[in-house]
Length: 165
Image 1 (cartoon, rainbow, N blue to C red):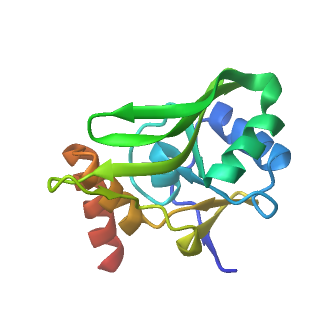
Image 2: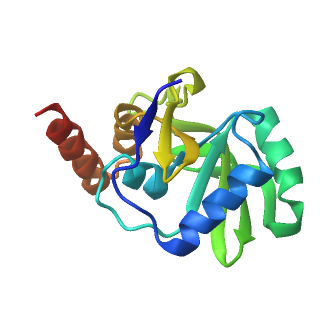
């Protein structure tokens, strides 16, 4: 599978924890992807990084939760807001918050629910020899637009446009 070189680095703490996560939950064994600010940053979106978001399918998120049991602060549970629902849990690994997510669906204006998670579209990113999976920027853009996060969506759109020129 082709690798794309990371376009921006991560803070040392996040890079170290990401390496630890790859060791604890190898992405070639457990199907998961880095999303949120870490996935965006590695793909060239100039955005600050706070936590590490891991997205997986329902059966995999529980297996990941078990592998990270010593770090779990909030067990994986159903999480709902007026416009979004998912499974979510939180871990803290070496001081860095790691959010576990699965089954994310966004409610559209017509009331229907849509998921933007397609693990067949994963892209692999090389961060100084560390291989991590993420979703393509186009998929992240659709998700951020569905969440109504216009500022982040604009940054993603600009990055996509810059890559085309």
